[in-house]
Length: 337
Ligand code: NAD
Ligand code: DAU
Image (cartoon, rainbow, N blue to C red; front, side, top):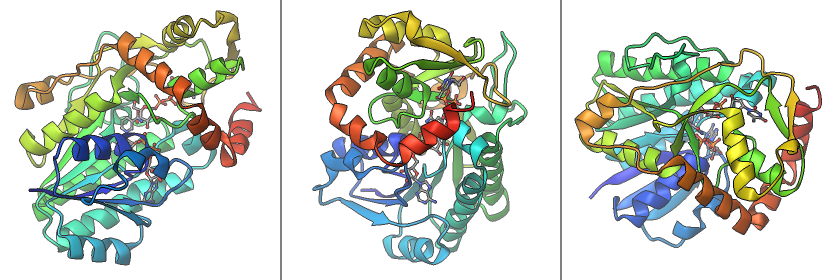
């Protein structure tokens, strides 16, 4: 049976991964190392909290002593590395924490894995490292890296660092690059949960620029299954793209969401665009599908409906998440637009 060390397991995708793995009997032990930044929320893990296979460690992936001791004691079969500063707008407002966690944190984990001969390291990355892609092209894993924001530059850097550990030290690292995730428990700074939350409250929906930027939407559980497939059947030293095969302009997404909620399109307001805003992301996931048999299963309309239903049912979760730091972030990001 497998011992897993998961970083960032209290966040949106990490917590979905922890719930999925423990729910499907996929680990004998799972340790979740998380700093609990604004984005980390132990409420996301209540469904597994009492599971004897699960243990939470509150700590920073940049803390080399803590990380080394943890890896040496646990001797994980696999490290699945989600922890990151994950939001582009925040990375623009305040880049320092992004480079600290996404670069130094990834380096610290890789070093611990190298020194303790960890048999498998899965580095979770993003399609944003390829930058904006002109239609009708799609990025495969050999596409040049052209990061536009501090966030995407930090992820591109951490990808290269991770792959260098395979080349130089033969650490069995695999990198996955996923497209835009959506689903339950996502922090309401990202497009879909922010728009759902504002629409439910009849608040304005801030559309950056002309709203015609294209993203490829991936349901979070499809992403988590893809990561498991990459661990099980993917090859060390390789990169695997994970796309949802559903490209939509932002305004199309928001209009679909408003229709499902029965709210008027007049809630949408155009605001000043994000600096350096990538126009279009598009991925080919052919390699992962061919090598592992994985494919995205959730149709976007169904996933969006399920997501809206979840946020409607969890108004208390949303209220707690939006109290405190969220208000000052919202002011800072949206007031000047
Ligand atoms: P998130 O912001 O919801 O969660 C990040 C988690 O990492 C939080 O629990 C936070 O507390 C933790 N964390 C942050 N800094 C830490 C540190 N220094 N030490 C320990 N823990 C720390 O992020 P997410 O959306 O779940 O993304 C998870 C990963 O997936 C990230 O690496 C991100 O780059 C990648 N990714 C995200 C998407 C997406 O659409 N959200 C798409 C592709 C890839
Ligand atoms: O592509 C994968 C990436 O997707 C991940 O690596 C990132 O962690 C994740 O945050 C996401 O990045 P994006 O910048 O694409 O996601 P975001 O939800 O912030 O924005 C999606 C699109 O919606 C983008 O074109 C900007 C636009 N937008 C976003 C917000 C928050 C708006 O128009 N208004 C908004 O208020």
